[in-house]
Length: 170
Image 1 (cartoon, rainbow, N blue to C red):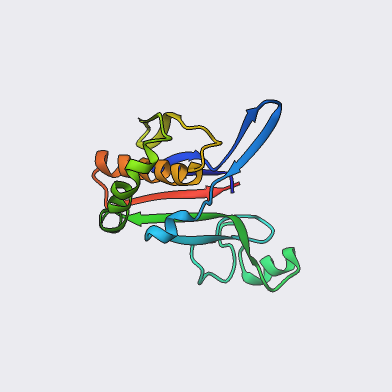
Image 2: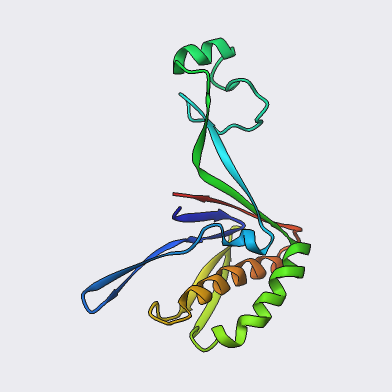
């Protein structure tokens, strides 16, 4: 998983150059689950690759007239396939109860390594504007988690929404 887009937008994979050596960092795209986020794997229809909107549908009703027609095209009975994307949601009350205290607890430690962190709103989505932290810091993973959660906090602090939602995909 490389990107996320929705109410918050960003990348989950970075590469850093240091003395002719490239370091690749991959953030756990599902870290929000441990903070109360809800993850849903997406499925797509075999053959047409449309997203399965309702898991109770027997076939892709946008592309086929019947389940039999869909089965004959894809030549399989299992027409739903896992797609390489996920949906993540966290509700404001869960964020307030679980994440804000975590942010406050770890802010003193993170602030030693995080030189700058700013965000900007573009089309009702929160994007990183600037952030500065050495990828070689011993607390780099913690700083990355903190920055990601601060991005969601920024969204909740500026938007009148009870839910922060985004897709995670390659």
